[in-house]
Length: 184
Image 1 (cartoon, helix red, strand yellow):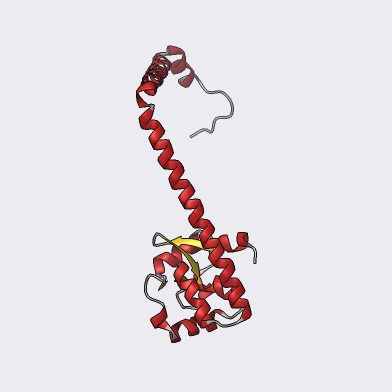
Image 2: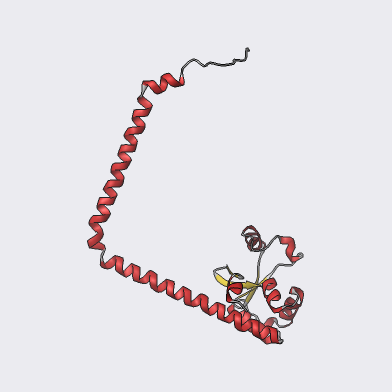
């Protein structure tokens, strides 16, 4: 199973990376109805941090982001969102060869997301360290840039003032109009 395909089906809802039931059903090659039925029969395996049902506002956001075509796509039912642990738990209730292969691929995708997040966090931390380390050296540069910005703003204000005080501008706007005139 291609990781890129799975990565496209991982969304962020309620601050968590999740996969939606209809995407999982398509990957497992089962009907969404069958997947939800299996989950409902084993609800004790899916606490709130493993799986939750989306509310109307969350569904509306997914529709507006073109994640799903429309609310009618669900046939009146709200979708389930599965966290990484919830997807892992699905392997215990869906016992087919395809389910095992798909679960392994999905777990790899979630691990890849975590690695990326760690790399990003480490990079942000290093940038912050460099900023604090070299802050005094770059203080002069920041001051010059701020001064240049203020100077440019002052010039722009002067140009605007000249344009509004220019008698030629007033003469142009109040000139007699030529061409076809409709009689009142």
